[in-house]
Length: 316
Image 1 (cartoon, rainbow, N blue to C red):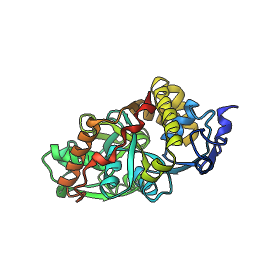
Image 2 (image 1 turned 90 degrees about the vertical axis):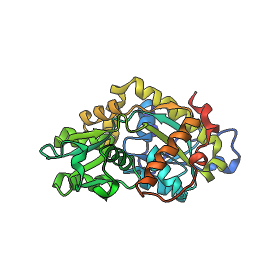
Image 3 (image 1 turned 45 degrees about the horizontal axis):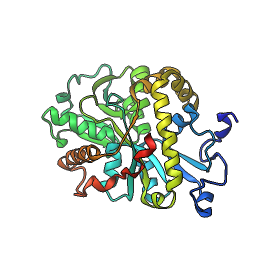
Image 4 (image 1 turned 45 degrees about the vertical axis):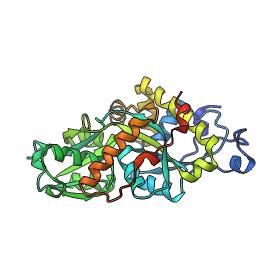
């Protein structure tokens, strides 16, 4: 069967079968509900062909950003979904019953602070008193905090406006905000189509960690499906890193992005699978400390409980 035949579209079922042999009858009948951000998990699995022969059903839901995906995950509307380390940990610290079950590391260049091409803002210190849009608890929010901290500014020295990526793009294009902190294809769109300048990117500021997160309930009830899905995802990630042009071509078709935008996105985001370990926990503590210092979160919850390393074998 051609892998394209497996793709039914948004909210559809992918693959058929009675279920994994390790599952009981009830678990086999229940689909694995997976959330994906635009150009994320779904796109890389489709492009790589890693879904071929999947022995259970998958229901896809697509989200514009990590925050709504994580809200759906915490509410049980999806079982599994990918997010950067900042939004994942922000959601966990806010009480979401979720755990990271697979890690990937990509570097920080795909997240950036953008300003209009003719802006008078030339250095991070120039952000003082400016209106800056990003998503609450997003990787963009975290990058902004790190950059202004290095520039010896406090969180109260800038006016942060929390907007969805679509709304932020419209505000940026209209000139109603002074800067926009965003990621992935949104950076590519702003740079290549709107001639936006990159004031700073995440290189040297961000770990580049991203996590496939699962609800606690799904871990308990759908472990065999999750393990199989994570093996396929790790395989797909390695394929994408080794075949950027092929991935960009499929990404363009699946998302409607132009090929130049897809190529830029792929070249700046290569999430290589890595194990969840003590380094993950240490980096998570540091990240949450920055959010706390800025007053963005109040929770003192230890992020050690946010990670489940029992799925590490799936990256082999």
